[in-house]
Length: 289
Image 1: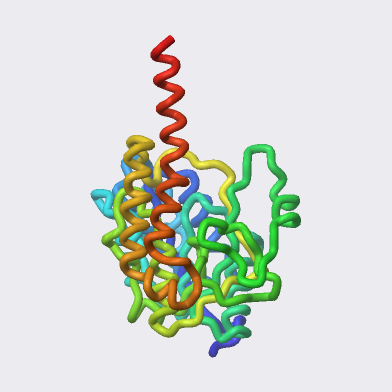
Image 2 (image 1 turned 30 degrees about the horizontal axis):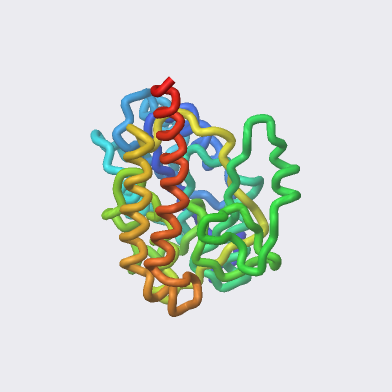
């Protein structure tokens, strides 16, 4: 394994109609130690993302822009960026997520210390007005780190094996020779990242989460995945989750990671449909008045 100081990293960022966020993330990536390449996949954007990124690329040849004329979705966009990556390591991050200081260098160091092929960190949804440092300082810790529906949990140790990883992570490029993002996930692409991490573990790669960093989102702006309606969004949550369980459920149960595919699917349906039912009830009550 390469020592952290001599490792090279390609940063891959899929983006859509978030030019300000994309520009800020590109500036950040180009300033990081170890980064020799930054690949942005502009996925069917109609704003000025390409022009703003090109202004940076004209100043720094490490920035590469792949432009999709039509939106193909995060799994395919990530696979396109990965195929363009040339470094020993690939760091993938969403355009609207904010990384902790020195995150990439920290992840490379952990990968070498743990003998890991994939290293990630907890992810947090920080509310407006909420202090980031305070939220991180009071975040829970668990022996295995994040859970299936709880991405904001730190491992109790410096790192821990974990399949329930949040989206942003560092990957050894050789991982992608046998594992790719599954492009069958659609709509809101729910579970596409979890699918990748489970697939990587099943292929024999070591996937760990570390307490040496984090990523967070402050508030979601426009762009990204379109949300035509709440009902349509929830449909794809249920549809994609069932596909995930059909693909990995038996293995997850054998590993003691879930109780069973049927139980997990019914639990998810219950959690996701109750808010819709309450909202429908409120609308009916207002209409009756």
